[in-house]
Length: 209
View 1 (cartoon, helix red, strand yellow):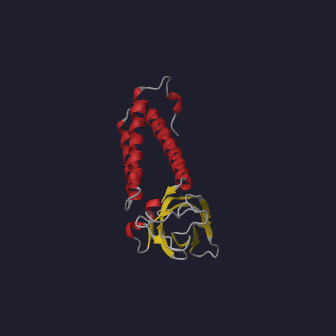
View 2 (cartoon, helix red, strand yellow):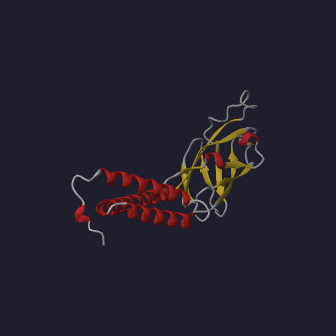
View 3 (cartoon, helix red, strand yellow):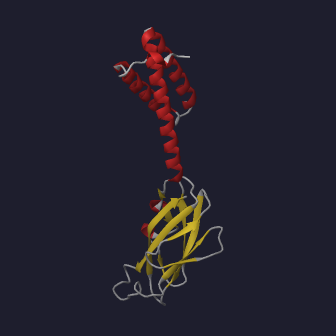
């Protein structure tokens, strides 16, 4: 057991340099953990450098090295736990991941009763999806129709695996359960006046717990 009573106040500069060194080492090994055999490489590097630092240090400076190593380890563990909590609960913007099947420029144009299917690529599963759509007159029809302002204009969303259709007016946000599905799919059905051609655009799509 190292004798920490030898540490003096204020702490010697060697302590802070050693602390900085080990923080850099742990940061580097954290990056290694994301590649193949990263855990093994990280363990070997940490053990090797720690042994070299202790052997190369004079006897009276070893408590400072031990203290720096312990401090760095605690800081890294706390930082890792904080990041894991943040990563588990942070929301994920998947607006750019919404893909409508067969729609030009990913902007489906629908008439009353027509459907458009879509999929959402999920980078990290979450329990809920908050989504909204903007419903406007189609660009090639807006000169002779004004259906976007009609109160009956809306879309009905049916997610795969669900039997309940959810009605959305333009720019209305709703939060739906997706139960951590790795893949999300569904269909939109247009509700509009007869002969109205409407364009649908996703204005928000966000996964969260």
